[in-house]
Image 1 (cartoon, rainbow, N blue to C red):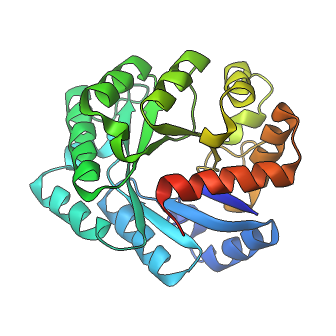
Image 2 (cartoon, helix red, strand yellow):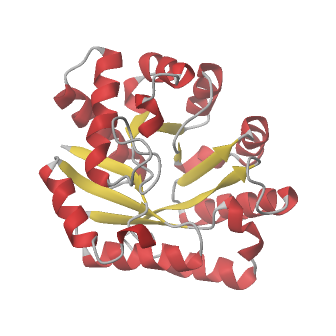
Length: 255
C-alpha cells in the first residue's frame, strides 16, 4: 500500500471528480492521502474533505505566495482548524524566491509565525522551498522548526542539505520530478539518504511523473514515484510502499 503525502484534492482541477479520483487511487494501492492547504479557503476545504473521507487527512496553513494573508485573524483561524483531529500538520509554509508573489520579508515572517503555531500545537510542519535553500535552512535552525517533526515537500535540494534537514528532524518527500531523466541531484538524494526519512507524494494536480508529464496529476500516480524510488534503491515496490507509508504515518502521527 502507498500514501500520497502531499496532494491538493481541493484544487479546482478536481471539481466534481474527487470521488472518482479517490476510487482510482484505491485501485492503484493508495490507502491514504494527505490534502494540503495553501491559504485559508483551501485549508478549510482540505479539512472538509478529511472530515468526509476516512482515508484523507488535512494540513492547514498559508503558502509563501499568500504570506500577506497571515494576520492575527488568519492565525486564529489556523489555530481553530488545526485543533481538529483530522489535521495532521501546519503548512504548507516556507519561502518561494522563484515567483516572489509576496514580499520576501512577509514570506519570512509568515514562515516563522506558522512554525510557532506548529510548536504550540505540537504538530509537524510542511515546508515549501523554491530557490531559497539557504534562507529556509537559516530559519529552520533559528526557530528549531523540526522540533515536532516536519516534511520538506517535493525536495529539490542537494545531498548535503538533505543530511542537514534530517539532523534538524525532517523527513524528505519526493514527487514527480524524481522520474525525470535530468533530475540527477534528486536521484542522488533518493539513492543515498536513509530510507526511514523518505516519503512519496504527487503535489497533484501539479508535477505529474513520467510518462504523464505536462498533464494533470492525481494521487494514483504516486505509484510511479514509488516505482522510481524502488528502482534507485534496488528494492521491491512492496518494500518501498511499506517503508514510505510507515514514515508518513510516523511524521504525521496517523494511526
